[in-house]
Length: 306
Image 1: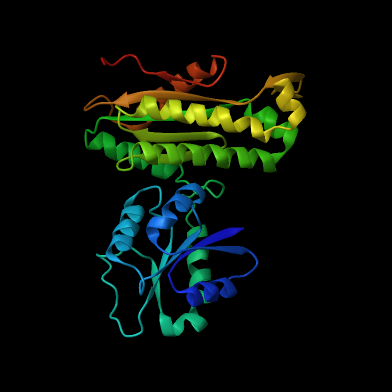
Image 2: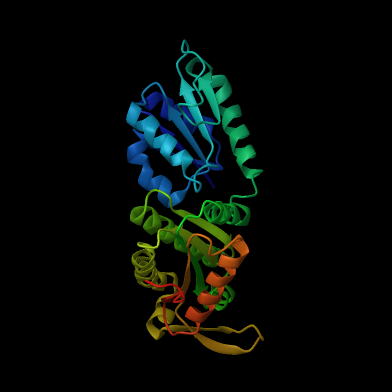
């Protein structure tokens, strides 16, 4: 089901949005952008509708900050504006479309459908987690390399995910991936609100970019949260036993422990790398090293002086 976030203090406008949407869309309402941020970070909705008639300067500033973040840059936003106001200054507010209040009844449904259809054509958004995909990941890394920025790249992967997926089915497996993405996104954004990035390579592989000074703290918080939450995705009996019975990649039956998360971390300093492929391969190799250890852990590139 698609999720539409409506930000307005006008109850009648919110109800109009609810009645306009069909059974395939869920409408979640907030008074201000500030009150909606936690939900947006957790759920990453399909569309955002903001009532500019009741928005203050803080809401506009927060919206622009949200849209300037590469993780949320492709989140479509529709602005509702006054009947008599001029066209919005697109340099002052970052939105994709607008509807005048007098046209809401006739045009809102069409605008919603158009924005949703347009966003679905943007293949760079992973449809499961709503996070940027490989092209955006590579672009974010290369831009930092080209600008000689010192940063940490972390590559996260779930251990024993495939046996879990085979045993419990794709639906529960998708829920685990979504949960993992939300944990990483929330902790990264709480730990470093500006200059960070989270992307979804595909499957159960995710990456995040943060400053070198914060990467270990953030990685440990991700591990702690994942280990605390992941047992709840198992049936009580399997949770009690601490393992499940499934098949390995060769088709042989065996037992697999509760899922863990492995993170490989490497660093880019000025002139260390010239291409995103170099640093991503190094992070992937360190992730493989982390997977050799029992339990959730992270492994760091030790080839740089501290």
